[in-house]
Length: 469
Image (cartoon, rainbow, N blue to C red; front, side):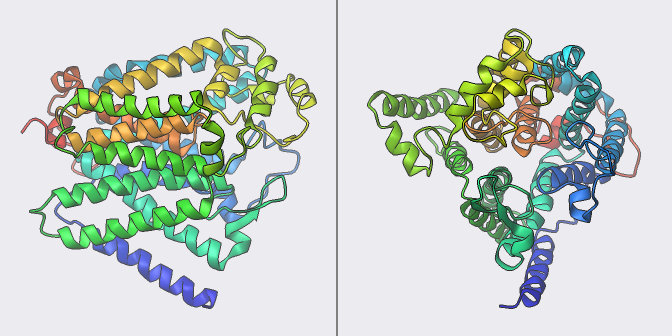
């Protein structure tokens, strides 16, 4: 099929998905476009990448980044902060309930002081705050469940079909070569692993959307919504396959299992059963390792027994950490003088610019203190997701799936970095679970009188989640 005809078909199909998923009965906040644009950029290419703008002469993109991209992110961040100022009661309540996140971001800010490039570290911290601001914009929306649903659909309806179009009909845009010279499918991103994690996050959101529509038996537009979300999920699975990212595929299987299991009568609203399910999955992995089945499993996932060279990278970077307790400073390890030692210990993978392990990445930048804080976030988020089952098994299942997928994904990829889809998904899951699970949020959420432009709401956020009815 000629590329022009395929483009026309895909364009009509994408427009059709948005048309099928329309719902004029729900009044959405205009501020929701901010996280949609933010996640859309993070999940694809930078603005300069889309426009083909080269960096100015003499600009070190590793340290300074692109002025155009920085401006776009700053505008979105400022607009997000303004939107949250009109929702101050709900925002404060959620931040208090999510105190491990506040503690982590505060420590990250402090760590910029001992970075070899404090100004660069601070700029990266500002972008990381943008991730949290966008999550809060979604969760404090007048219609938070619908906002979450539309965040996934507005981004996924476009990026996933467009990735398939790029890969199949525009190889100059959708395919490339990794630093080793091997071909890879990149879709709307610039790397196969990035494409894989985008498909992972959006596919879990699509699966949750399908489950939600199936459960809403009295919804007037149920059939067309189900069709749109089923096609959305189908594209997610196709892109997952095209990305050839073993980690993302395995994490999707794990997240899907947890999400679907949450709907079973024996598990629904029973946190103990959820604990048993998660423990069973962990025991299977441990027993596999103990009985020597790890090589078989690794090969089945398409990896070498050294996790495609990751163990060599881990052995080279861990000793190079400048301070075991506090690390190199926020997002600073890969721009520091100790890289000479790292590269001298690597026989291959000289192109590496991350540890390919989220926990090691945190250790390198923030030391053991950072690892303790990340562990606190994961454990606290998991507990809140399980507690959310008591009040909303559907949303609790999504939160648990995203948290579990993020934790596992970060074993072989740097998943706890700013402007990363899996990190944003983790933040979104934790904050959304806090809305349902923490009674302090419910007590603090007061009716607000807000502007009529739809940026904020005149009802408590928990009423909008439907858990006070």
